[in-house]
Amino acid sequence: MEIQTVGTDAFEMDYVRFGNGPRPFVILPGLAVQSVLESADAIAAAYKPFTEDFTVWLFDPRKDLPPGYAVRDMSRDTAAAMRALGLADACVFGASMGGMVAMGIAVEHPRLVKKLVLASTTARMTDERRRSLGRWIALAKAGRIEELYLDFGENLYPPSVFASFREAALQAAKTVTARGLDRFVALAEAARGFDAAGAPGDIACPTLVVASRDDRVFGDGAAAEIAEMIPGAELFLYDGYGHALYDTAPDFGARMLEFFRRS
Image (cartoon, rainbow, N blue to C red; front, side, top):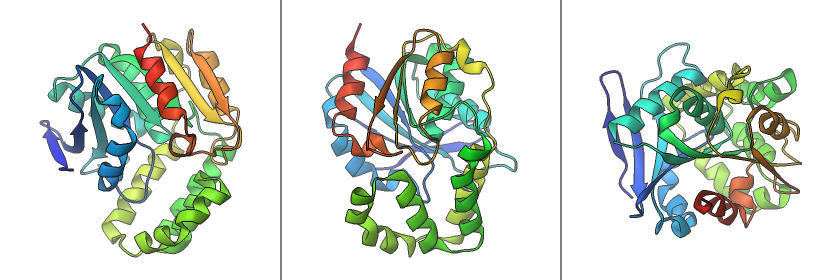
């Protein structure tokens, strides 16, 4: 699948587009050591059920990250990219760090978001929630890439799931560049400093908040906290699917599609 680039006066941002449905659906992925756009074909296959109703847009963070780049900047830049592409009234799905970005868009640019799904994310980082990010940043800065991939996978996925692609993860670790590590650190630092304060309370669109009770990154209380802040938000909790439930829960896609289709 071809990676495309949208440009504004201030930056460029990569994305992929698939499907031919009449409604826009925007996916904002979580933190990753390498760009999820490299797995765009697999993502398109997973989201094939959406393509009759939606044209799907999967965004990467902007290409050049300025010093001190923060989650609120990611929200601002992604909103600008959406406008540049003519997107509005989109169904938006934010996973993990992407959920932080999505909340900012929904608050500051409400006309861009018709419905919102937040999975495995948080409205604020606590000391407990920073621990995984702190380890990953330290490993990346030390160039211990294999350890980074192992710790990342072990915290995002249930043990049986990660065991099935552990060797593939180690092979992927060999392809990481120094520039890629620097980018990962910058994005992880942005997530580690995130605090939306009371802003989610200003989200007015229908919102579904999803998490797994065994989330080893943000814990099982983060989703409930968000759902309590957003007026009328729905909350669904899984058991046993880990932080990356958006990849591991077999009915997650169908649950999200049903929410988006609901009038």
